Length: 228
Ligand SMILES: O=C(O)[C@@H](CO)OP(=O)(O)O
Image (cartoon, rainbow, N blue to C red; front, side, top):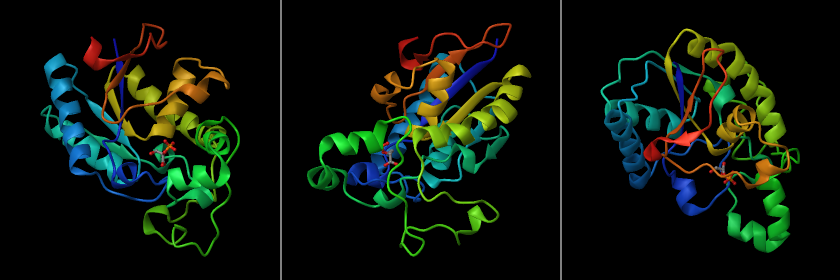
């Protein structure tokens, strides 16, 4: 039966610095690279070898995918990159220090911005140093000014239905290397988590999550590959 493997990228430079990241393109730290390699080694150890891969347009997820695939002998599988798997856009919070922002606006407000279902962060100004409208990778794409989790779901889910699910239906072992909130969007759907409960869901870096699908292509319980 087909399996879906979800991996959040390893620690990024701004995870380490505790800064709001979103669509800003930061690389992995050395620890993040090690986490990605370990994810690949775990796939090899458990004999769960991906046959097709999907990732975002962001370096940290792409490099996590590549390091993981190198470490399970699968660099050769087909891979598709799509902006719909990008991290949720952090709007005007992009680049700010999370602790300083909590000190300024209160921890409760920051939790709402970080984890609520439908409250987007404040929008990013067009002239911000973090604006991406002219980044060639987003040519032809309407880059959002900010996204809530609900907005993120609105682009992740159709991509899942139109690109990822067909691969699962074709019997592939699919790996998706993406981000904390684009994966929260997917897990919310696959594990049928309510709009309220999703507030508490955290996805750890570099830790493969697996869904095995049944004959009707319904996902089973999600589990961490390390626990299997
Ligand atoms: O900064 C971000 O883009 C995300 C993921 O690292 O952070 P958060 O945990 O606030 O969703």
